[in-house]
Image 1 (tube, rainbow, N blue to C red):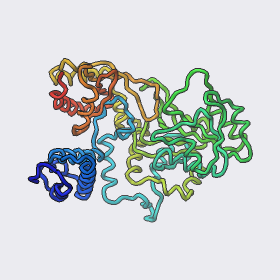
Image 2: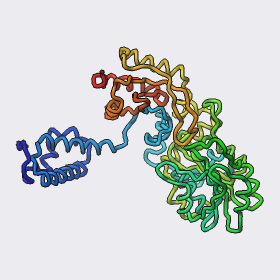
Image 3: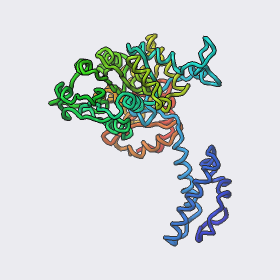
Image 4: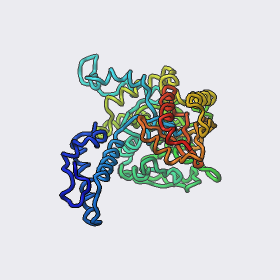
Length: 462
Protein backbone atom coordinates (compact mmCIF):
# COMPACT_ATOMS: atom_id res chain seq x y z
CA UNK A 1 0.00 0.00 0.00
CA UNK A 2 2.47 2.60 -1.21
CA UNK A 3 -0.30 4.98 -2.30
CA UNK A 4 -0.42 7.86 0.24
CA UNK A 5 -3.41 9.78 -1.08
CA UNK A 6 -6.67 8.42 -2.49
CA UNK A 7 -7.78 10.76 -5.25
CA UNK A 8 -9.95 8.48 -7.41
CA UNK A 9 -12.04 5.35 -6.86
CA UNK A 10 -9.27 3.28 -8.44
CA UNK A 11 -6.81 4.41 -5.78
CA UNK A 12 -8.50 2.44 -3.01
CA UNK A 13 -6.43 -0.61 -1.96
CA UNK A 14 -7.84 -4.06 -2.67
CA UNK A 15 -9.77 -5.69 0.17
CA UNK A 16 -7.35 -8.62 0.29
CA UNK A 17 -4.45 -6.19 0.56
CA UNK A 18 -6.08 -4.51 3.54
CA UNK A 19 -6.78 -7.88 5.17
CA UNK A 20 -3.02 -8.58 5.05
CA UNK A 21 -2.00 -5.10 6.23
CA UNK A 22 0.28 -5.00 9.28
CA UNK A 23 -1.39 -1.76 10.40
CA UNK A 24 -4.73 -3.57 10.72
CA UNK A 25 -3.42 -6.89 12.02
CA UNK A 26 -4.31 -6.19 15.67
CA UNK A 27 -7.80 -4.99 14.75
CA UNK A 28 -8.45 -7.98 12.49
CA UNK A 29 -6.85 -10.65 14.67
CA UNK A 30 -9.50 -12.95 16.16
CA UNK A 31 -12.32 -11.81 13.88
CA UNK A 32 -13.71 -14.25 11.30
CA UNK A 33 -12.25 -13.42 7.89
CA UNK A 34 -15.73 -13.23 6.36
CA UNK A 35 -16.79 -10.59 8.89
CA UNK A 36 -13.57 -8.58 8.53
CA UNK A 37 -13.98 -8.66 4.74
CA UNK A 38 -17.56 -7.41 4.99
CA UNK A 39 -16.59 -4.58 7.35
CA UNK A 40 -13.73 -3.45 5.10
CA UNK A 41 -16.00 -3.45 2.06
CA UNK A 42 -18.64 -1.39 3.89
CA UNK A 43 -16.10 1.19 5.06
CA UNK A 44 -14.59 1.50 1.59
CA UNK A 45 -18.09 1.82 0.14
CA UNK A 46 -18.88 4.71 2.50
CA UNK A 47 -15.57 6.44 1.74
CA UNK A 48 -16.17 6.10 -1.98
CA UNK A 49 -19.48 7.90 -1.58
CA UNK A 50 -17.72 10.66 0.38
CA UNK A 51 -15.06 10.94 -2.31
CA UNK A 52 -17.70 11.39 -5.01
CA UNK A 53 -19.65 13.98 -3.02
CA UNK A 54 -16.80 16.02 -1.57
CA UNK A 55 -14.24 15.56 -4.34
CA UNK A 56 -11.50 15.69 -1.72
CA UNK A 57 -8.60 13.29 -1.41
CA UNK A 58 -8.61 10.75 1.40
CA UNK A 59 -5.33 10.02 3.13
CA UNK A 60 -4.08 6.49 3.66
CA UNK A 61 -4.00 7.21 7.40
CA UNK A 62 -7.67 8.27 7.39
CA UNK A 63 -8.60 5.02 5.62
CA UNK A 64 -6.68 2.91 8.16
CA UNK A 65 -8.22 4.85 11.07
CA UNK A 66 -11.75 4.37 9.70
CA UNK A 67 -11.16 0.65 9.22
CA UNK A 68 -9.61 0.26 12.68
CA UNK A 69 -12.57 1.98 14.31
CA UNK A 70 -15.12 -0.10 12.41
CA UNK A 71 -13.33 -3.37 13.21
CA UNK A 72 -13.03 -2.42 16.90
CA UNK A 73 -16.74 -1.62 17.10
CA UNK A 74 -17.56 -5.12 15.95
CA UNK A 75 -15.13 -6.66 18.41
CA UNK A 76 -16.95 -4.78 21.18
CA UNK A 77 -20.19 -6.52 20.20
CA UNK A 78 -18.83 -9.88 21.37
CA UNK A 79 -19.75 -10.89 24.91
CA UNK A 80 -16.79 -10.16 27.18
CA UNK A 81 -15.99 -10.09 30.85
CA UNK A 82 -16.91 -6.86 32.66
CA UNK A 83 -15.98 -5.55 36.11
CA UNK A 84 -19.26 -4.07 37.36
CA UNK A 85 -18.45 -0.88 39.28
CA UNK A 86 -21.86 0.71 38.69
CA UNK A 87 -23.29 -0.16 42.11
CA UNK A 88 -26.23 -1.97 40.48
CA UNK A 89 -25.99 -5.66 41.30
CA UNK A 90 -28.62 -7.10 38.96
CA UNK A 91 -27.66 -5.00 35.95
CA UNK A 92 -29.62 -5.97 32.83
CA UNK A 93 -27.00 -4.48 30.49
CA UNK A 94 -24.27 -6.47 32.24
CA UNK A 95 -25.97 -9.87 32.23
CA UNK A 96 -28.19 -9.44 35.30
CA UNK A 97 -27.15 -11.68 38.21
CA UNK A 98 -23.45 -12.61 38.17
CA UNK A 99 -22.55 -16.31 38.10
CA UNK A 100 -19.84 -17.63 40.40
CA UNK A 101 -16.91 -19.78 39.32
CA UNK A 102 -18.04 -22.55 41.66
CA UNK A 103 -21.40 -22.82 39.89
CA UNK A 104 -19.75 -22.91 36.46
CA UNK A 105 -17.31 -25.59 37.61
CA UNK A 106 -20.09 -27.70 39.09
CA UNK A 107 -22.25 -27.69 35.98
CA UNK A 108 -19.36 -28.09 33.50
CA UNK A 109 -19.06 -31.82 34.13
CA UNK A 110 -22.79 -32.34 33.57
CA UNK A 111 -23.06 -30.29 30.37
CA UNK A 112 -19.79 -31.32 28.70
CA UNK A 113 -20.42 -34.15 26.26
CA UNK A 114 -23.66 -36.05 26.78
CA UNK A 115 -26.00 -36.23 29.76
CA UNK A 116 -29.31 -37.79 30.82
CA UNK A 117 -31.40 -34.73 29.92
CA UNK A 118 -34.38 -36.82 28.75
CA UNK A 119 -33.35 -40.31 29.80
CA UNK A 120 -34.95 -42.15 32.72
CA UNK A 121 -31.99 -43.89 34.34
CA UNK A 122 -34.29 -46.26 36.28
CA UNK A 123 -35.82 -48.03 33.28
CA UNK A 124 -33.57 -46.74 30.49
CA UNK A 125 -36.49 -45.22 28.61
CA UNK A 126 -37.19 -41.66 27.52
CA UNK A 127 -38.09 -39.33 30.36
CA UNK A 128 -39.09 -35.72 30.85
CA UNK A 129 -36.43 -33.03 31.12
CA UNK A 130 -35.84 -31.07 34.30
CA UNK A 131 -37.75 -33.31 36.73
CA UNK A 132 -35.32 -32.77 39.62
CA UNK A 133 -35.03 -29.05 38.89
CA UNK A 134 -38.80 -28.60 38.90
CA UNK A 135 -39.16 -30.59 42.12
CA UNK A 136 -36.56 -28.45 43.91
CA UNK A 137 -38.35 -25.30 42.74
CA UNK A 138 -41.72 -26.60 43.96
CA UNK A 139 -40.24 -27.42 47.36
CA UNK A 140 -38.73 -23.95 47.71
CA UNK A 141 -41.99 -22.17 46.90
CA UNK A 142 -44.44 -24.46 48.67
CA UNK A 143 -46.17 -25.19 45.36
CA UNK A 144 -47.55 -28.50 44.14
CA UNK A 145 -45.62 -28.39 40.89
CA UNK A 146 -43.38 -26.25 38.69
CA UNK A 147 -42.40 -25.60 35.09
CA UNK A 148 -39.45 -23.73 33.60
CA UNK A 149 -39.38 -21.68 30.39
CA UNK A 150 -36.82 -19.31 28.86
CA UNK A 151 -37.81 -16.02 30.56
CA UNK A 152 -40.53 -14.44 32.68
CA UNK A 153 -42.27 -12.81 29.72
CA UNK A 154 -42.58 -16.26 28.16
CA UNK A 155 -43.86 -17.62 31.47
CA UNK A 156 -46.67 -15.07 31.61
CA UNK A 157 -47.42 -15.55 27.92
CA UNK A 158 -47.75 -19.35 28.14
CA UNK A 159 -49.93 -19.07 31.27
CA UNK A 160 -52.33 -16.62 29.61
CA UNK A 161 -52.34 -18.56 26.33
CA UNK A 162 -53.20 -21.76 28.18
CA UNK A 163 -56.00 -20.49 30.41
CA UNK A 164 -57.41 -17.33 28.86
CA UNK A 165 -57.51 -17.46 25.03
CA UNK A 166 -60.33 -15.17 23.81
CA UNK A 167 -61.39 -14.64 27.43
CA UNK A 168 -61.08 -11.72 29.83
CA UNK A 169 -58.19 -11.16 32.21
CA UNK A 170 -58.76 -8.64 35.02
CA UNK A 171 -55.79 -6.38 35.73
CA UNK A 172 -55.51 -3.19 37.77
CA UNK A 173 -54.65 -0.06 35.78
CA UNK A 174 -51.94 0.59 38.36
CA UNK A 175 -50.20 -2.62 37.26
CA UNK A 176 -50.11 -2.02 33.49
CA UNK A 177 -46.33 -1.87 33.67
CA UNK A 178 -43.62 -1.84 31.04
CA UNK A 179 -40.72 -4.17 31.73
CA UNK A 180 -37.16 -4.06 30.38
CA UNK A 181 -36.53 -3.79 26.67
CA UNK A 182 -39.81 -2.01 25.99
CA UNK A 183 -42.05 -5.04 26.62
CA UNK A 184 -45.41 -4.03 28.05
CA UNK A 185 -47.71 -6.28 30.03
CA UNK A 186 -50.78 -5.30 27.91
CA UNK A 187 -48.90 -6.22 24.71
CA UNK A 188 -47.88 -9.63 26.05
CA UNK A 189 -51.44 -10.21 27.20
CA UNK A 190 -52.85 -9.28 23.79
CA UNK A 191 -50.40 -11.53 21.89
CA UNK A 192 -51.33 -14.45 24.13
CA UNK A 193 -54.89 -14.30 22.80
CA UNK A 194 -56.40 -13.09 26.06
CA UNK A 195 -58.57 -9.99 26.39
CA UNK A 196 -57.46 -7.30 28.82
CA UNK A 197 -60.07 -5.87 31.17
CA UNK A 198 -58.64 -2.89 33.03
CA UNK A 199 -60.06 -2.34 36.51
CA UNK A 200 -59.75 0.57 38.94
CA UNK A 201 -57.63 3.64 38.27
CA UNK A 202 -53.90 4.30 38.11
CA UNK A 203 -53.61 4.95 41.82
CA UNK A 204 -56.73 3.40 43.40
CA UNK A 205 -58.09 -0.08 42.80
CA UNK A 206 -60.67 -1.55 45.21
CA UNK A 207 -62.26 -4.97 45.56
CA UNK A 208 -65.55 -3.77 43.97
CA UNK A 209 -63.59 -2.78 40.85
CA UNK A 210 -62.62 -6.42 40.36
CA UNK A 211 -65.99 -7.85 41.45
CA UNK A 212 -68.01 -5.66 39.09
CA UNK A 213 -65.81 -6.61 36.13
CA UNK A 214 -66.39 -10.37 36.53
CA UNK A 215 -68.73 -11.94 33.99
CA UNK A 216 -69.17 -15.23 32.14
CA UNK A 217 -66.24 -14.45 29.81
CA UNK A 218 -63.72 -13.83 32.60
CA UNK A 219 -60.97 -16.45 32.88
CA UNK A 220 -58.60 -15.18 35.51
CA UNK A 221 -57.40 -12.36 37.73
CA UNK A 222 -53.84 -11.22 37.13
CA UNK A 223 -51.79 -9.35 39.70
CA UNK A 224 -48.46 -7.89 38.54
CA UNK A 225 -45.62 -6.81 40.80
CA UNK A 226 -44.74 -3.26 39.76
CA UNK A 227 -41.00 -4.05 39.90
CA UNK A 228 -39.30 -1.00 38.39
CA UNK A 229 -41.36 1.75 40.03
CA UNK A 230 -43.10 2.59 43.27
CA UNK A 231 -46.38 4.44 43.83
CA UNK A 232 -46.78 6.66 46.86
CA UNK A 233 -49.31 9.11 48.25
CA UNK A 234 -53.04 8.56 47.72
CA UNK A 235 -52.89 4.93 46.58
CA UNK A 236 -54.64 1.64 47.26
CA UNK A 237 -54.46 -1.87 45.85
CA UNK A 238 -56.16 -5.14 46.74
CA UNK A 239 -53.93 -7.70 48.51
CA UNK A 240 -53.45 -11.07 46.85
CA UNK A 241 -55.17 -12.92 49.71
CA UNK A 242 -58.39 -10.95 49.18
CA UNK A 243 -58.26 -11.51 45.45
CA UNK A 244 -58.00 -15.23 46.20
CA UNK A 245 -61.39 -15.13 47.92
CA UNK A 246 -62.96 -13.38 44.92
CA UNK A 247 -61.35 -15.80 42.47
CA UNK A 248 -62.52 -18.80 44.51
CA UNK A 249 -66.08 -17.48 44.68
CA UNK A 250 -66.27 -16.97 40.92
CA UNK A 251 -64.24 -20.06 39.94
CA UNK A 252 -61.47 -17.97 38.38
CA UNK A 253 -57.74 -18.59 38.29
CA UNK A 254 -55.53 -16.20 40.26
CA UNK A 255 -52.13 -15.53 38.68
CA UNK A 256 -49.32 -13.51 40.26
CA UNK A 257 -46.50 -12.21 38.06
CA UNK A 258 -43.78 -11.54 40.63
CA UNK A 259 -41.18 -10.35 38.14
CA UNK A 260 -37.90 -10.21 40.06
CA UNK A 261 -38.94 -13.06 42.31
CA UNK A 262 -37.05 -13.40 45.59
CA UNK A 263 -37.19 -16.89 47.06
CA UNK A 264 -36.40 -15.96 50.65
CA UNK A 265 -37.27 -13.01 52.95
CA UNK A 266 -34.95 -10.08 52.25
CA UNK A 267 -35.59 -7.93 55.33
CA UNK A 268 -32.70 -9.28 57.41
CA UNK A 269 -29.93 -8.85 54.85
CA UNK A 270 -31.26 -5.92 52.80
CA UNK A 271 -33.42 -4.08 55.30
CA UNK A 272 -36.40 -4.15 52.92
CA UNK A 273 -39.12 -6.67 52.14
CA UNK A 274 -39.47 -8.06 48.63
CA UNK A 275 -42.48 -10.31 47.93
CA UNK A 276 -41.59 -13.99 47.72
CA UNK A 277 -43.10 -16.79 45.65
CA UNK A 278 -43.69 -18.78 48.85
CA UNK A 279 -45.86 -15.98 50.26
CA UNK A 280 -47.80 -15.67 47.00
CA UNK A 281 -48.63 -19.39 47.08
CA UNK A 282 -49.68 -19.11 50.73
CA UNK A 283 -51.89 -16.14 49.88
CA UNK A 284 -53.81 -18.28 47.41
CA UNK A 285 -52.26 -17.69 43.99
CA UNK A 286 -53.00 -20.61 41.68
CA UNK A 287 -49.95 -19.78 39.55
CA UNK A 288 -46.90 -17.62 40.27
CA UNK A 289 -44.22 -16.72 37.73
CA UNK A 290 -40.88 -14.95 38.18
CA UNK A 291 -37.37 -14.66 36.76
CA UNK A 292 -34.38 -16.93 37.31
CA UNK A 293 -31.63 -14.37 36.76
CA UNK A 294 -32.68 -11.52 39.03
CA UNK A 295 -33.00 -11.78 42.82
CA UNK A 296 -32.83 -15.56 42.57
CA UNK A 297 -29.19 -15.16 41.49
CA UNK A 298 -29.31 -17.79 38.74
CA UNK A 299 -29.52 -17.90 34.95
CA UNK A 300 -32.14 -16.51 32.58
CA UNK A 301 -35.37 -18.47 32.92
CA UNK A 302 -39.07 -18.01 33.52
CA UNK A 303 -40.12 -19.96 36.61
CA UNK A 304 -43.75 -21.07 36.92
CA UNK A 305 -45.08 -22.62 40.12
CA UNK A 306 -48.58 -23.53 41.25
CA UNK A 307 -51.22 -26.22 41.34
CA UNK A 308 -50.21 -29.48 39.66
CA UNK A 309 -53.27 -29.78 37.43
CA UNK A 310 -52.63 -26.27 36.06
CA UNK A 311 -48.88 -26.82 35.54
CA UNK A 312 -49.68 -30.07 33.70
CA UNK A 313 -52.01 -28.19 31.33
CA UNK A 314 -49.32 -25.59 30.65
CA UNK A 315 -46.87 -28.34 29.68
CA UNK A 316 -49.46 -29.82 27.28
CA UNK A 317 -49.80 -26.50 25.45
CA UNK A 318 -48.19 -26.99 22.00
CA UNK A 319 -46.42 -23.65 22.45
CA UNK A 320 -44.63 -24.89 25.57
CA UNK A 321 -41.96 -26.54 23.44
CA UNK A 322 -41.14 -23.19 21.81
CA UNK A 323 -40.17 -21.64 25.14
CA UNK A 324 -38.54 -24.55 26.95
CA UNK A 325 -34.98 -24.34 28.28
CA UNK A 326 -31.88 -26.37 27.48
CA UNK A 327 -29.52 -28.58 29.48
CA UNK A 328 -27.27 -25.67 30.54
CA UNK A 329 -30.13 -23.75 32.17
CA UNK A 330 -31.52 -26.86 33.85
CA UNK A 331 -28.13 -27.90 35.26
CA UNK A 332 -27.44 -24.39 36.56
CA UNK A 333 -30.85 -23.99 38.18
CA UNK A 334 -30.61 -27.42 39.82
CA UNK A 335 -27.48 -26.29 41.66
CA UNK A 336 -28.93 -22.88 42.53
CA UNK A 337 -32.13 -24.40 43.94
CA UNK A 338 -30.14 -26.98 45.94
CA UNK A 339 -28.10 -24.15 47.48
CA UNK A 340 -31.31 -22.53 48.74
CA UNK A 341 -32.65 -25.84 50.02
CA UNK A 342 -29.34 -26.56 51.82
CA UNK A 343 -29.20 -23.04 53.25
CA UNK A 344 -25.82 -22.36 51.62
CA UNK A 345 -26.99 -19.72 49.12
CA UNK A 346 -25.06 -16.90 50.80
CA UNK A 347 -21.84 -18.85 50.30
CA UNK A 348 -22.62 -20.47 46.94
CA UNK A 349 -24.53 -17.85 44.94
CA UNK A 350 -22.51 -14.87 43.71
CA UNK A 351 -25.33 -12.32 44.11
CA UNK A 352 -25.81 -13.19 47.78
CA UNK A 353 -22.06 -13.21 48.36
CA UNK A 354 -21.90 -9.62 47.13
CA UNK A 355 -24.96 -8.57 49.13
CA UNK A 356 -23.44 -10.05 52.29
CA UNK A 357 -20.31 -7.86 52.25
CA UNK A 358 -20.60 -5.14 54.90
CA UNK A 359 -20.08 -1.45 54.34
CA UNK A 360 -17.07 -1.63 56.67
CA UNK A 361 -15.40 -4.32 54.58
CA UNK A 362 -16.05 -2.34 51.41
CA UNK A 363 -14.41 0.69 53.02
CA UNK A 364 -11.31 -1.36 53.92
CA UNK A 365 -11.09 -2.69 50.35
CA UNK A 366 -11.37 0.79 48.86
CA UNK A 367 -8.68 2.18 51.18
CA UNK A 368 -6.35 -0.69 50.28
CA UNK A 369 -6.79 -0.06 46.56
CA UNK A 370 -5.99 3.64 47.03
CA UNK A 371 -2.96 2.80 49.17
CA UNK A 372 -1.62 0.41 46.52
CA UNK A 373 -2.04 3.15 43.92
CA UNK A 374 -0.06 5.59 46.04
CA UNK A 375 -3.15 7.47 47.26
CA UNK A 376 -3.69 9.66 44.15
CA UNK A 377 -4.91 13.09 45.22
CA UNK A 378 -7.80 13.07 42.77
CA UNK A 379 -9.28 9.74 44.00
CA UNK A 380 -11.18 9.66 47.29
CA UNK A 381 -12.95 6.89 49.22
CA UNK A 382 -16.56 7.87 49.90
CA UNK A 383 -19.85 6.36 51.07
CA UNK A 384 -22.19 5.71 48.14
CA UNK A 385 -25.55 4.10 47.49
CA UNK A 386 -26.05 0.93 45.50
CA UNK A 387 -29.22 -0.78 44.24
CA UNK A 388 -30.44 -4.30 43.57
CA UNK A 389 -31.60 -3.51 40.02
CA UNK A 390 -33.51 -5.87 37.74
CA UNK A 391 -36.84 -4.57 39.03
CA UNK A 392 -36.16 -5.57 42.63
CA UNK A 393 -36.65 -3.09 45.46
CA UNK A 394 -36.39 0.01 43.24
CA UNK A 395 -36.36 2.44 46.19
CA UNK A 396 -34.12 0.37 48.44
CA UNK A 397 -30.74 2.11 48.43
CA UNK A 398 -28.06 -0.12 49.93
CA UNK A 399 -25.03 1.36 51.72
CA UNK A 400 -21.85 1.01 49.67
CA UNK A 401 -18.41 2.52 49.17
CA UNK A 402 -16.85 3.87 46.00
CA UNK A 403 -13.61 5.18 44.54
CA UNK A 404 -14.63 8.70 43.56
CA UNK A 405 -12.66 10.77 41.02
CA UNK A 406 -12.59 14.53 41.51
CA UNK A 407 -14.51 16.90 39.22
CA UNK A 408 -11.23 18.03 37.66
CA UNK A 409 -11.14 14.65 35.92
CA UNK A 410 -13.32 14.49 32.79
CA UNK A 411 -15.89 11.91 33.92
CA UNK A 412 -17.28 11.04 30.47
CA UNK A 413 -13.82 10.62 28.95
CA UNK A 414 -12.62 8.57 31.92
CA UNK A 415 -15.68 6.31 31.72
CA UNK A 416 -14.92 5.76 28.03
CA UNK A 417 -11.27 4.91 28.72
CA UNK A 418 -12.18 2.31 31.35
CA UNK A 419 -14.68 0.85 28.87
CA UNK A 420 -11.87 0.07 26.41
CA UNK A 421 -9.86 -2.09 28.81
CA UNK A 422 -9.73 -5.87 29.01
CA UNK A 423 -11.59 -6.73 31.13
CA UNK A 424 -13.83 -3.70 30.79
CA UNK A 425 -14.50 -1.53 33.83
CA UNK A 426 -17.99 -0.04 33.90
CA UNK A 427 -18.60 2.69 36.47
CA UNK A 428 -21.15 5.47 36.79
CA UNK A 429 -21.21 9.25 36.74
CA UNK A 430 -22.84 11.17 39.59
CA UNK A 431 -22.68 14.94 40.07
CA UNK A 432 -20.12 15.18 37.26
CA UNK A 433 -17.79 12.74 39.03
CA UNK A 434 -16.76 9.25 37.98
CA UNK A 435 -17.55 6.65 40.66
CA UNK A 436 -16.23 3.11 40.74
CA UNK A 437 -18.65 1.56 43.24
CA UNK A 438 -17.37 -1.58 44.99
CA UNK A 439 -20.70 -3.20 45.95
CA UNK A 440 -20.82 -5.41 42.85
CA UNK A 441 -17.04 -5.88 42.62
CA UNK A 442 -15.95 -9.28 43.92
CA UNK A 443 -12.94 -9.49 46.21
CA UNK A 444 -10.92 -11.42 43.63
CA UNK A 445 -11.56 -8.61 41.12
CA UNK A 446 -9.94 -5.91 43.26
CA UNK A 447 -6.44 -6.58 41.90
CA UNK A 448 -7.78 -6.29 38.35
CA UNK A 449 -9.51 -3.03 39.26
CA UNK A 450 -6.35 -1.70 40.87
CA UNK A 451 -4.22 -2.70 37.87
CA UNK A 452 -6.70 -1.10 35.47
CA UNK A 453 -6.71 2.19 37.37
CA UNK A 454 -2.91 2.20 37.44
CA UNK A 455 -2.88 1.57 33.68
CA UNK A 456 -5.04 4.59 32.90
CA UNK A 457 -3.74 6.97 35.60
CA UNK A 458 -1.38 8.78 33.17
CA UNK A 459 -4.39 9.54 30.93
CA UNK A 460 -6.49 10.78 33.85
CA UNK A 461 -3.98 13.07 35.54
CA UNK A 462 -5.09 16.67 36.01
